Figure (tube, helix red, strand yellow):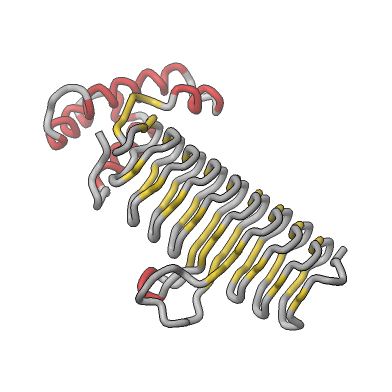
Length: 257
């Protein structure tokens, strides 16, 4: 069902079963997948591709031009996967040429009211941004991470899988996978135990991650020596520990500790 007051460019691709509410604006070059619901007064700008069965609530701004001084109107894109929920007043921006030209959102994510995703971000699957959470440009977030309300993440940071960032947290360095972070400048406070339990991580896996955490962040060892100690320990065989170690070793901004 498409409301008669909606403004839809003839060159937009609207799939079967899409619902578009009153006064929504859909520009040319936009593609919307089957079963997606667009609320009243939503604006979807050129270069936006939206997958199937998404819900976009009223007054959201989707695919707007990036807030980057270097951007000069080039054609860039915002790619949104399937099953995403985008609540009221959420803003998702297109990419910039210098950042690869694409902002990418995976599947099953939940963007609560007033949250913001800036240009060139790469969001995985089943990520949650709580109310007012703000991502600067070029941020990468792995699957199942949760960003608490009114938190802000600095540009080029990376957030690991199953990480939990508490509300009112300022993130200026990378947050490793499976960790709990909080503070005006984010610090680690152990594993995200609630998240790991909710996703049915085994007791053995949690035990190995706890040991890895203690070695890396609480032993007083240098990062190089901590990595060496883990490599010599049986926990190095754990896929989760391997991912944690790889994430830390490939960090460019540095790791919150």
